[in-house]
Length: 400
Image (cartoon, rainbow, N blue to C red; front, side, top):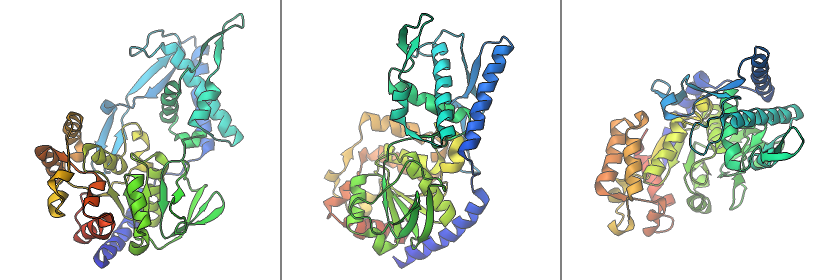
């Protein structure tokens, strides 16, 4: 592993320089609160001007984003949708009136402002139940609920995020803890000093909010960060103490990494200069997980500068690994019609336009097979930690 470590160290130095140029602007909850007030004032002003009260919500759709090749991230464009109080027509079947969605938007913004003012935070689920109250008619009788299902409130939270340019964590709303990390690093978590090399079999649970006021990095001997798609495979790496032998941080997000994991990796990359490698299944869904970490996502395009890691490298699995590592043909799984549909879809994304990626995806389609990370256990249970990954890092067999 000497070569891999040396290469990682060089990359770390280069990444540190990049981080200095690209460090995202710091924001705070007070600023988010001020932007909510501005949103409310604009609505009040519309009422005073006898206009139809409305809010403008930036569209979180594929047609309203672009891939900035120079920066290597997905960016949000200027397209917006107007949500008006006096509009009774839903935009899509089953969506309900725009009047109701307007009211829901204002109510969620109000509760977020209350959380900011109180210096408090709550879970997405708790917020839904707080909002699950009836609308009362003029005679005081309860009518329908403002929010009947969490599937109604979740998108509104995202609308508020993009409307006031703040992450939900800055609005006082957080998701449940998902993901774990272990490795040679000491951090301070909410005032508690934690040695991440002494976390047992479960690792340190990555919280939803990982901003500098909550999580601080103290010292580390890590040379790189390895994101592992699945918790079960991460357990193998932890059990084999891969992180100790190879001086790295290993982290997982239980599939598609949640914001806390992505934001923490962003910080480790930019603030500590650690290269990032991504280890996912060899299928269209694994490729997509990698792309979201690297370029950002459509839903969070407005925050790509604080979450995307353009320098992240895809270390596997590759369709070509079956031959390189002599994996028996019967171990691979056939591509499903849904896999093929998704592969064709992502092959058209501009961030997968590089020749190496086109070759990778087309080869998977041609052989009609996919490989899970667990397929390497057909060789032996520690093959992935003892032979597969060390060899790929040494040979620098990754995709950028």
